[in-house]
Length: 209
Image 1 (cartoon, rainbow, N blue to C red):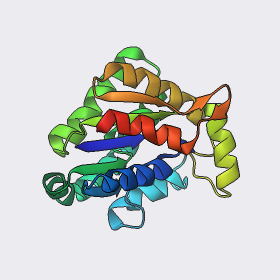
Image 2 (image 1 turned 60 degrees about the vertical axis):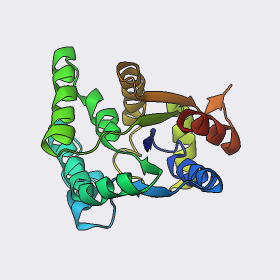
Image 3 (image 1 turned 120 degrees about the vertical axis):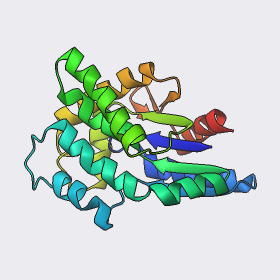
């Protein structure tokens, strides 16, 4: 099973992927972890420059989406091989992230739907990237996200430092979740407080076992 765990900044993606890996391996499942973008690799060169604002803060969504898609394309051969050889592939972000973080930048409804189809065509048809079986969106409110990011990171990229981006990405994710049969929302907070890591992990495992 190819499972993507996505969410806005600070939602606990990295923590949960590691916890889920350990839980699956305890059940004698073979697991491989992926993390997109592939920071530190040459394929993520344009992504990193974009996130640190070197191209400005108002790039066309299609251009910035292209940076991420090509980074994923660079890892495609290994990913396809691993899908055939492991019980579970767990990816921290994937094509879903392009949709969540870029889709909202387009205000016109028709143009936004065109962009959605364009991303799908770019990543799954032109780049021929494998489609995940499940996309699990860790639903953390923008207010909680900002609190968590503030606690954890001193230096923020252009997405993390923009509260408007966080709010809009969150709303995009909720809309996109309702449009995809293979997307599932994992509620990570209740009454203004984060649920325990154990509770969130259990909810994820119920979706993929």
